[in-house]
Image (cartoon, rainbow, N blue to C red):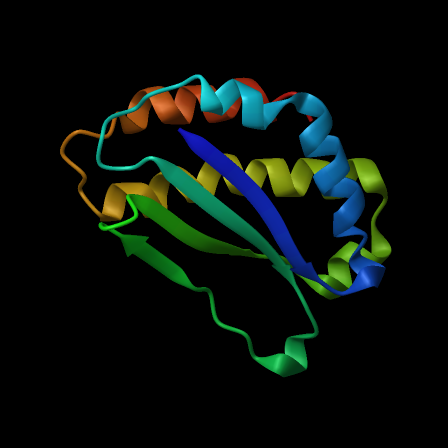
Length: 128
């Protein structure tokens, strides 16, 4: 399964450094070797950390044709400007571990092993 994590963030949030830390874990290679069922072949996560005045809403989309799930993880820009990089990494990893499986479960995909996927998320991103 392909897992890709991108960002749409204000530069002051320093989400680019979080992406570097995630990439250094080798998550793409790890998840590329996994198969959780044929209904989902890819998950694309966008870390959103923008000005609150923009009133951005979380986007979630399941494309049956592409066998992909696209989702935003909303982050607090004001908080991210104030904390250190280790805390940023921990917050993002925690949100991925918590939010992604719960979003996938809402689709009630019959052949997707959410339990194994959640275990692998914890194994990979729990390192941060």
